[in-house]
Image (tube, rainbow, N blue to C red; front, side, top):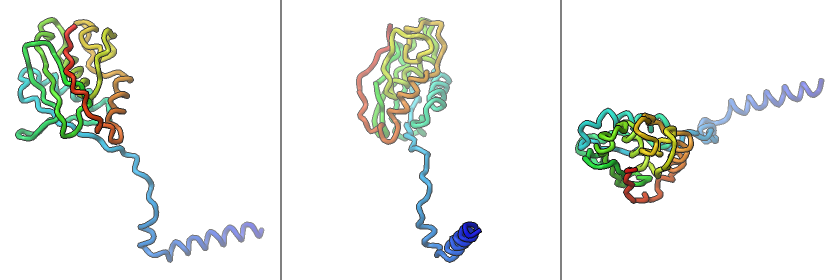
Length: 190
């Protein structure tokens, strides 16, 4: 019986102590840590990529759905974008990143690959993957976005696989995007 009395008394004392604690002290109490990680936002400009708009939008959507440490947004007209996307007549190529806020990267969406039968959305997502820091994984299966043209013209996969998602997530996690971009231009001809 004495234990119950002591427990009831200490519980009541704690309640009274809380009731008389000044509001300033309560506000200064430690708060639970926020688990939301900072998201790196990168802007892209596709104003010089006529005919590729739908493929670019789909490729960007694939990356935005796949990785939560970096988010790609279309740059408003007249603003500077980290990623410049242009349409060319050659073979697709891109700057190897990871590009960081304020940095510069380029994607060239070459029509030569489309003429040979490669999927536009896969091309756009693959080239953006280079800007995000992923090299080619050639030869490779269709399930790997970064296998690029080595997966063949029948491959329509534009979704990064688990390893590709994890690598990009790590490159942009907790300030890692401050690592300078590689800067090499990767030409995706096979």
